[in-house]
Image (cartoon, rainbow, N blue to C red):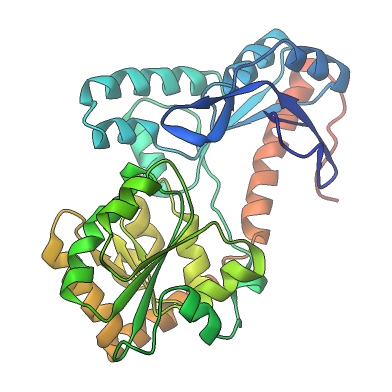
Length: 351
């Protein structure tokens, strides 16, 4: 059984989805957030789960904390968004300690707190989170590998025959201020043969359209499925300027596509790119570093091919089987706790 803000499908795979009344948060109007309404408790009592998993608890996740205590159920939480880092980015440093306190409180009762990277695990440990575990992430390697480049998609991403030796850089993700996309404007002015394709949407789009006016920048909105895979296959490089991620799944998608990556230096990104062996790393606060890295990615063929090859070897092992078995192992630990609490038989996930 899944609980999600209203508007979600009624079923996902084999699971029933319970929609909870929701609201739009002014910083992220394209997303909906919910508080834990009483219907959650009624549904849980009828369903009788063995444990509760709260994915990125913030508002709705309060229900996981309360009902796991009320119904005496083991509780697991996973941490996917570094909200306190957003406070630093928006200049609200005074708010950061309060946010760390709030999220520490939400995770305090959890028997296991899963992190998607070792860098995030170390950061949470430094901020007093307990019971930490690792849940590595994967990518649909079949969807993103062996897709041919498409000239029509390149044109859709901004490539034009009017430009000599045109290059297309791709960004995929939410359009928000903390993503740092404005820092790329300097490079587009310095390298006029480059087009930037921004795939995604979000509250910062209008501002980005203003910032990139007069450059070869295309805003495609969200792309999904085969269209997204074709966009990765048709670009010349992938750029990732954010320093606030807990992981950055789009890096995996680009690597699986064979698309060379340039990304801002941060502990989780450095972990994914193996310190620069699987991608080009730049200093997000140094425009010259961004420009030099972009030139390396696009024009240093020897270095690009070496990095590209290493990234593809890593991506070959990034399918979802490993992360899924990792998560099931954590679930089995919780089932053992449920047995101790309720003295009921443990139903194994794997036979």
